[in-house]
Length: 518
Image 1 (tube, rainbow, N blue to C red):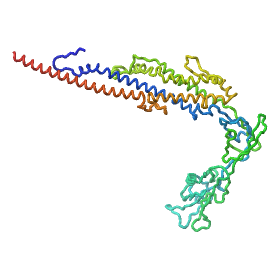
Image 2 (image 1 turned 135 degrees about the vertical axis):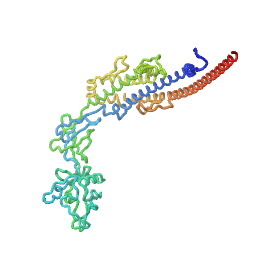
Image 3 (image 1 turned 90 degrees about the horizontal axis):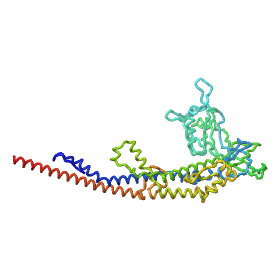
Image 4 (image 1 turned 90 degrees about the vertical axis):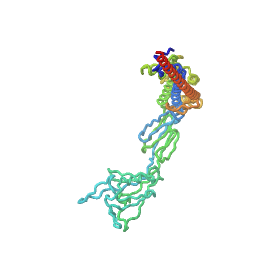
């Protein structure tokens, strides 16, 4: 490199040092590029980790592909007295038809006002008006203020009642709405309600059955010199009869293929629900002389939708992995340095980095092993899958799966358990693929430091992985090299400064010498 110095003063030391350091910084640029490339690779592994984790989650026993009911779903059909019951079949529901006769519905114990609750007539009127939720106790028709002591605005009259032995205190300023709220938010295990249309107040047990009580009580204020009105009396509940709840009663007959009764059993229910032969029944009304008939049939729609989703998800993951493994790698497009970026347009940088990031996982051994393992699981069951309408494509399609929906529906109708047998269980496709995904997530974690328990794309990397240690090594080497370059740059500045000082002294001596000879 040729350096030009114009005269002995005004040397551009900064430019000269910069030119000298450019070559020295080449190894640093190389290290930074290698670190950037490693960072891109880790990000690419994390993206794959997210996809694999999402697939593994769907393979769990509680999720889409691992849930037995999604593969062997059945539906219950109600005929006859359709409005009397609701039926829902579980995955293991029996195919035996049933005739259901609801003799009694379970009811809740309740007590209701004997008459309409009114507001005191307005001044000059003898006609009371119907109470509403905002009516206060003091405004109710029939309320007479106590005289000992007489209530005031600051000290309104209070009432005490008990509901199922839970004590409540109300004042004449409490509204019907606040009375409801206090009772309903208590541990009395009842539901209080007020119907503004009928004007009636009711208290009902929360639970069905004959053993659930509603007990109301208060002090005996009749004839008392210190209490004129009764709150239960104002609400028309004092003499109201308690309607006791009852248990539900059901008779179920199992039928043969001709509709003849082959078995009879009677059931009692406290909540209008019961489960028989894998079918959940909800009782809605008494059937009378017309029973309801329940039959179960295979719900092919749910099973087909589940398998379609499995194939789509499987194909998507397999295609992504194949694409990463086969992606073109452009070795002439390394990561750009900051200096290179400063000389390029944004569009040029984007285009360059697209090529630089291509092929980050080309021929990656973890992905190739996972692809082979996934295809092996499918190929080992291809005979059974084929009978269900599931086949693989051409060899160049990388193991892609195809589904013949009509063939799958026919197979489900003839043998509904076959699908579950192939996909689920300890030796099923779902379990084997789940094991494969677990192993892959572990390998990603060991190499790139990804989180094998999460698919979060912003999750931090573990430092104690292979790539994590490499990143720390790059960071350390870069730090050491920067320090050496800084020292080198300082030496250059000192050398040029010494050289300029020496030149200035030479110039000064020359000027002095020439001045003497003149």
